[in-house]
Each structure stands twice: as structure tokens, then as C-alpha cells.
Length: 494
Image (cartoon, rainbow, N blue to C red; front, side):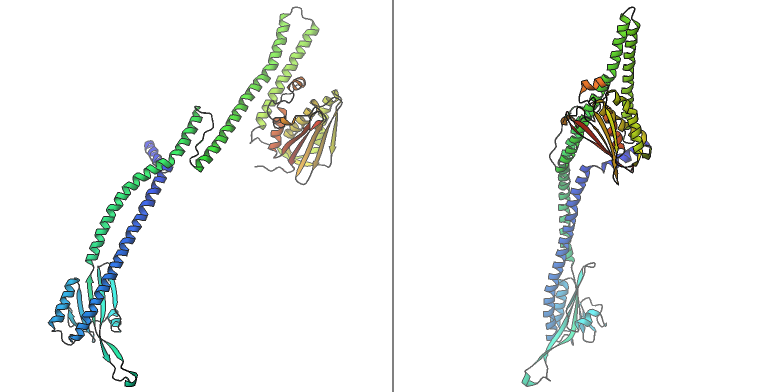
């Protein structure tokens, strides 16, 4: 059963092949028009042949009709000359000739089976009105022609002063049927020849279609092979298949993706390297401090306490790095859950600044809060608290002693805006696009002194993006830095 299903799916997959579809399309485009052309040519030939045959025969029948009047055949059918002509025409066209007088009686039938009978039909009635009618029966392959037998007389009632007037009168009808077997035989021969030509064309078309489909699909196969080489690691450079505009678009998109993958891989490697370094550094310091204690005898209590305090500080630092990494992983997920609820932002910011002012006080940094209005927004209070705290804490850490940190809150009908401003060392312009990268530090030596992990801004940015907001920075070296956060008042989920 499984094998049957596999076989069925394999057959279905064959019809998804672009090569097969191009092949079938070329074959269909070549075969169907040729069939229509063959039918149209044969149909046109048949119509033209019947028209020519009818025209030729009608000319001879008009001459014969004149002979019938000349020999008085409608009154006396014994004329051997006329009978011979009728038999000759009947044999010549493999048909039948019936002569009908004006009383609708059949006076002559070359088949000899209807003489003495009366015939009344639409064609005969119209023929007695002077019309020559020709009908073609393509099913039975014969042409039926009704020819009026007319006589021209001079009207004796016409005024002699007006001149003589000729009058045509229908004295009888000649009803003839003639076979079109010769035409049909010619059509059959032409049809057979056309079929032979079509078969040859079909074979050539199949071969040509197979060749063209293979050639047309070749660039896509090169795209597949090139992508496979990249996937298997044999090639890491950008690829190029400029044969078609479509392949060029595919390759352009693939190269962009490849570049993005390389950037991600480089970022991953750098991240792993940074994480390893950051986690290893406190451990190395603790190892050095512990070895120093173990290598000394009779260590003074004061030195012992000092080293143990240093070890405790390194443990706290290690713990902070690990917590920041866990937070980063958690907030880096696009599907991270948010506990959205209405929050009074004025109270929230006041609480955050209350917690951070003791840190600022150690360096005599004044933390100022300015609010233009009361603002309530739909946010995740815990995550937003972490983001704002990181910004304010960074402003304090990297600010100048005896300086200030100003936090401002404002809102319009759609967004609330938080500004965190300091008069610290500032950020070089070339570092603006890197400050949100993990472990990136503008001044690594200074950051090491103040204990930064290089993850705060990355966490902050992710939290703000989760709230459908954005963050931007303005800074000048030696003057200060301002971070602007803008978030919708009403949270809109995906």
C-alpha cells in the first residue's frame, strides 16, 4: 500500500515539473493549430470543388434545357437525341436526371423508376418561379440542382409603338443529382497525405520540444546546483545565473539571503565569543583571587575579607550577565508574551527614578523628571520598567560627575514619548548603528570599570519593538546623549 502511494505521489510530482510543462505546451501549441489548419484546408477545398462542379454542370444543364424546348421534349419524350444526351450526362456525372413538366408530372427519369409520378417540393416550386437552386448534401456526397426549362416568347398584347417585348415562361423543371464521390476521393487522399505529414511533424515536434524544454530549464538547474553547493558548504560565495530575468531575480534574492545568513552567522560567532569572554572573565578573576589566598600562609583577616568581597563582586557580575542573557533570549522572541494592562506612566517613571537616584547620588548626578501631562498607556509594566531602567541607568553610568540626567514624558493622541537626556561623554556618530548590538560598547575600558554587560540597550530595543514602538538616539561627543522612545498609547497585537 505504501509503495502504491509513493508511486502515485511520484506520478503527481512529475506533472509539477517545469520541464514537462514546457514540453507539453510546445507539443500542444504545435499539434492543435496543425489539426485546425488541416481541417480548414480540406473544408475549403471541398466547398470550392463543389462550387466549381455546380457552376460547370449548371452551364451544361441550361444548354440541355434549351435543347428540350427546341425538340419539344416536354410534349414528346421519344427524341433519341435528347434521350442520348440525358443518358450521357447521367453517366458522366454518375447521377440522375428527372424532367418535370408544368403539371408537376415526371416525364423522364434516367433511373426509370419515377416516370408518370407527380412531384411537388419547395425546390421545384421555386424553380417554376424562375430560380436555379443548388444544394449540397455532404453526408450522402451528392449535389442536387433544379434548373428551369424556359421558353422566350414575344408578348402579342404589347403596344407596337412601344416596341416588341420578350417574355420568359417556365415550361418545366430539370431536377438533377450528381455524385461528388470523385471530390470525396480526392479529399480522402489529401487527408491521408496530411495525416502522414502531421505524424512526421509530430515526431519532429516532440524531439524539438524535448530539446527546447531541456535548454530552457537548464538555467534553473544551474540555480538548483549552485544553491545545493552553498547548502553543502562547497561554495560560500555569491552565485550568478543571468540567463533569464526570472533566474536573475531568484539569484538576487538568494544572494541577499546568503549575505544575511553570513551576517547572522558572523553575529552568532561574535555573540558566542563575547558570551564566552564575558562569562570567563569573572571566573578568571575569582580563580586568581582564590589562588592568591591559597598560595599564602597566615593570610591577614583584612586581606582575606577584601579578597572574599572581590570574589563576591565577581559572582554578582557573573549573575548579572547570566540574567541579562536570559532576558535577552526571552525578549528576542517575536512571539514573546506581553502582559498588557493600563499603566500610569507618571507613577511608573517616578518609581524607577526613586530606585536609581541612590546610584546617581554617589556621583552627585541630579536626576530630573519632567512631565507635560498625565499619561496612561496599555503596556507590559514589568518589561517597560526594565527598558526605561536600562536607559536611565546607562545615562547615570556614562554621565559626568556632578552632572544631570533628565527624563521627560509627553503624549499626543496616538503615542507617548519618553526622552532620557544626559550631559555625559556622548557617543560617536559611527557607533549609532552598533549600540543596540549585543555586548557592543563605545568605550570598553570605561564600561569595564562601571560593570556594564553590553546587553542593556539590546534588551531595551527588543522590549520597545514588542510594544510596536521605536527608539532613536542623538548624541554629541563631550556634550551628551538623548534617547527618544515612542510607543503607541493603545497596544495593537499582530
